Every structure is written in structure tokens, then in C-alpha cells.
Image 1 (tube, rainbow, N blue to C red):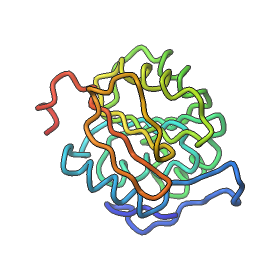
Image 2: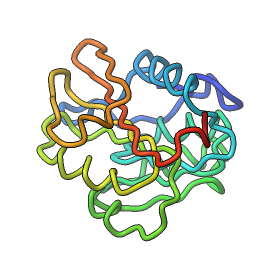
Image 3: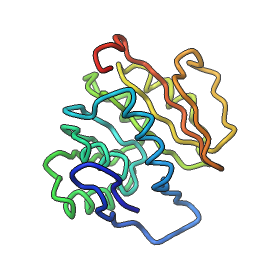
Length: 181
């Protein structure tokens, strides 16, 4: 797994040994996602959140492309922390050990330009996660198993893109979309 573009481009990330429980976002899916996002927002100076961060690949890709900072949230942030140190960008990172929904519910500031979530495919709280993210003035990127359909906030879906067994759904919860476009 590597950073695709920006000042950290081509740098490799440390990954955990493969297990049946982990499903890192492939370079191809991440590249496609960032191509879609780059047509909609500028990463320069934004703040990001990487939920279920694992290795932190989404957050580090944002930082590489100019994001001011990223909050990495997971029940185990060890790999993301290690990658932040290895990449020399730890000063732009905040690492929080927490459940994603609890984190979104506990944060009092509406400070994220983009929130990315990549829960396990067996995740059963998609609707609660989407509801928690909808409270923010943000783009919310949800990576999930293909075929998942969401009852809430369907009118806020900006884009859906399928990549084999993976699908990306982007929700636009921004209040004033023209600020970033």
C-alpha cells in the first residue's frame, strides 16, 4: 500500500499482516476516489477525519495533497501512528482511540471539510454512522461492500462508484457547496 500523489507520493505505508478481518483500501480504489474528489474540492488547507483508519491511508493521502491536518480514529491507531512518524507528518495528525460513531457524537466543533469512513464489511451500524456524519458541514465518503443501500439521507448522495466488491458512496452534507468548489 502506498501514497498515490502529492509530496508524499509513492511512499509505502506499513500494513498489518493480512487477516480475514482487515480489508485495506486498494491503491486502485483510492486513486479512483481521489480523482473523483479532486474534481470537487481542493485539498489545500482542509481538515480531514479518517474513521476506521487502520493504516491511515486516506488521511495520509489528504495530507500529501495539501490538507492542513487529519484526525485518525480507530479502536487501534497503532499502524496509523507508526505511519505518521515514518512519513514525518505526525505534527499534522491527531490519533484518537475510539468508536467512530462515539467520536462523531462527542466532537463539539464542526471542523472537518471531509470525513472518510471505511468500516469492516460486516459492519451493522451504517445508518447510525451516516446520521452521525450528517451533523457536520462536510463531504462524507463511505467505503462499503457493493450492494449496500442506505435508507437515510438518500437525497444527499452526491456520487456512488462500484469497484468490484467495494463501493464508494459520497454524501454531500455541506451547507454552502460553493465555498470549496
